[in-house]
Amino acid sequence: MFSLSRHALRHTRNFALIAAAKWRHPNPLGVVAAAATVVPIARCFADSDEGKTNPSKANNMENKSEKVTVNKEELRKRLTPLQYQVTQEAGTERPYTGCYNKHYEKGVYQCIVCHQDLFSSDTKYDSGCGWPAFNDVLDKGKVTLHRDASIPGMVRTEVRCSKCSAHMGHVFDDGPPPKHHRFCINSASIDFVRKAAPAPTPTSSKK
Ligand SMILES: [Zn+2]
Image 1 (tube, rainbow, N blue to C red):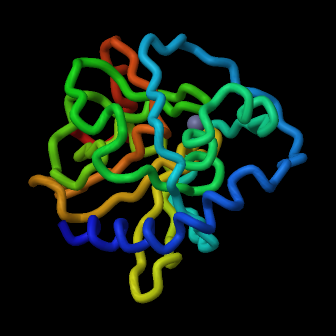
Image 2 (cartoon, rainbow, N blue to C red; image 1 turned 45 degrees about the horizontal axis):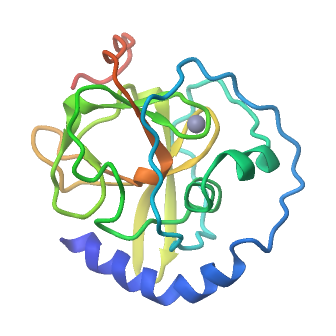
């Protein structure tokens, strides 16, 4: 698919850099951990630590959720290196390696960092791109969208958790009708929970 080859190229290019830099930054930022509302029953532990840097993080397009500050030192202990790199350093797991790529159990996918419900299994589909794909978000306010020009000659829309700003992936416009959204999300950024999707807010888009 269009975005896949670009991802793959970037991964190859940045792999050595990321692998070398992964544990170099102590991240002294103070944080207040978000209270988890649901204890995930399934956690994704991918074995890849490949990723990318993403220097372009601007143009917040949506911002509707309560913000939480995250303790990065606590996160380093709680998350796997890949989960930390993807969510906190805008990394990308290798395609076809994530544990949720072919996962279709009924439930909700939460942010791995703050446990905010983000995606429903009802909107998950097999896009063939190698990452979990959703054709919609649970609620428009659950994510923020950001212009990402980190790949030369290519502008993408980065998806982050609106509550803790964790990097989730990107959204493209080549998804299934009627909305044509393809939220291309890293397995390392989400946790699956077997529960019914919460009712959408009145302002949310219809799935
Ligand atoms: Zn979050």
